Length: 454
Image (cartoon, rainbow, N blue to C red):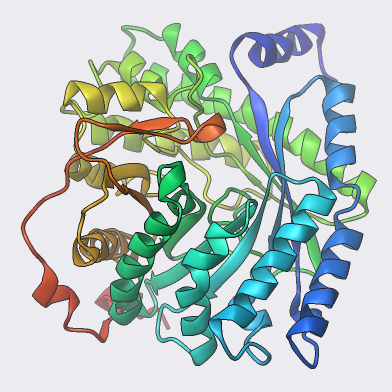
């Protein structure tokens, strides 16, 4: 039985501490949408998405009104399009036609984003994979709601360095084609190692082939709630601090569980997972950076930051798995620069560098996320940064990702404006020493020895 004190506490978390359900994401399999040609495939894709998700936004709004819980985004993820279009798409333009149809379907359903314009190439690329990857810049430039991702590595297979090299070029091309909006196309593209099949967060969401025909995944968020809770543990030892974070994560996850179950029942779609990531926004008081400061750091990036983030991430997960039997996705703490005001402040103060962020990604949920870099950064340098992050994921058996935005026409000291939840970002300096010979070797970095589990 839920007591009145719990109701009051949850209400305060929502109205004063920025607790929200960040997204309800419907995953939809498109494997049965392959037609005899591109047009028939596009039509089948549109019909399945719009029939499956026609009530997604409506139901999300109804649940929000019923419980008073903000549900910020309603999204769709689909089967990686390189798999769906592989037998019918013979050119880059064929894949772009599918991207346009995805955008049209997302617009019809009224969702914020649709993810899954993706390829899985951790061991090698098919012709279809390569065509889709080469089409990404134009696809993201001509659509508004389509998000794209490429998985280039895994603990089991190693790192596909041919794909990593190509993606450095693709990111620069995407930046150039969307330079009139501070290269925002790159904000809709992410490179993964060990990408999960059930991630509800953009830009990396796709509906994995291991999933059911349709599924409901929910992502919750509550950095402000965690920060407020640990204020009461100020000056206390780590045992008290950890217990405080764990109990707070439990409460946040229960809110997500409630929304997920209700959405599943109303839509007649099975419940998949709760992703209990602490996903910040540019709003003051909704920041992972503020949590790190409350733990005892002057700024994110100060000595001790990686240890503090590791502890935070672990306690969030421990609290979450007690609240739901189906925790999945990414689940932990996100550290995007542009979407977190105190992370922006730390970069501006010189406390947080790209190298320190890379170290922090060893212990958090994602990786180098929403980081603006100079627009004249070389493609091989971008590929080198991707390779470093993929290696962290591969060796540590965790998901890592890279969402870099080389902002054309801007350099260190400037800032890029993205708007909305994407916020703004100071342009961060990048190591100027070359890695061309390393990137140009090509081939595949083998899986680490500890990948052999059989």
